[in-house]
Length: 89
Image 1 (cartoon, helix red, strand yellow):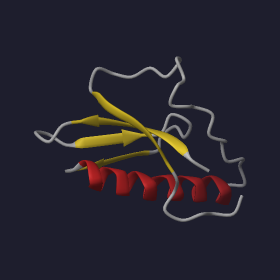
Image 2 (spheres, one colour; image 1 turned 60 degrees about the vertical axis):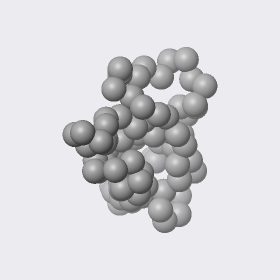
Image 3 (spheres, helix red, strand yellow; image 1 turned 135 degrees about the vertical axis):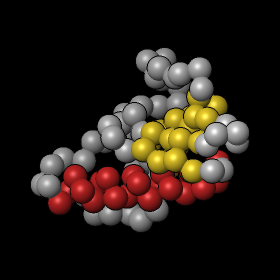
Image 4 (cartoon, one colour; image 1 turned 90 degrees about the vertical axis):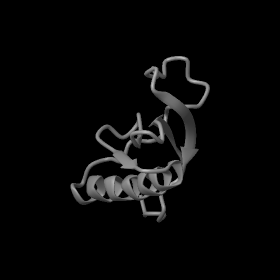
């Protein structure tokens, strides 16, 4: 599974990332690379927590071309990423 990730911020403060299809799944870091590494880990942990709770993992539905994707003026990029570890469904 690949999820859309919205990346915001700048080097003067920090960067943050969130996953529109996984509410509450966020990460922050000092660099873009660190933030992307951390959001991949956060996605894997978020999915694991959902599975442990016996709930259905939301399928990725947001697409890079989704016109309904609302970005703040701080958004610097939107990419697709997969979790660090592939977890069984």
